Length: 152
Image (cartoon, rainbow, N blue to C red; front, side):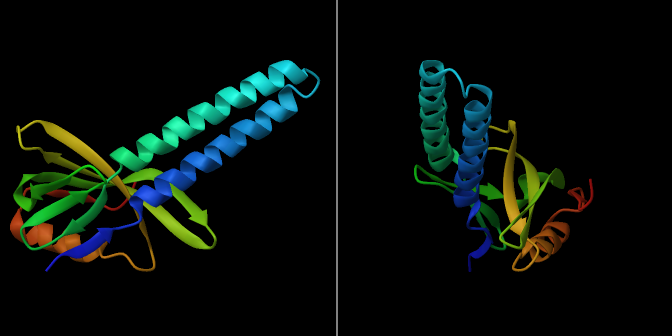
């Protein structure tokens, strides 16, 4: 049975991209207030970058699921399966944020991909409905060599 580890990862990345873009727009509006043409040109550039960046986040960000055998990475283009034995480390990253009262933490999973090349995937979990501890317990049972770091 497949369980959810981070099903809103793609949406959160798009929201963060939009928030960063809005921050950029505010900075441009303040910094170039007296230069109308230049302000409009830079705002158009920020808008284009925000749209392209949001689209890339939508296409390339994975939502994470797991079962007793695999970590499942899903996005709009593909579905990948990573054997739990190939996972080397689960680590709390430095990024954490609060959105509408919910605390989100960014984690990294390091694993060997299908070609046995090291790869890292990042994902967000909330402290309210996370199955992260259950996932980490399954990992510990599967592999004694996995490193789990729940602190920065």
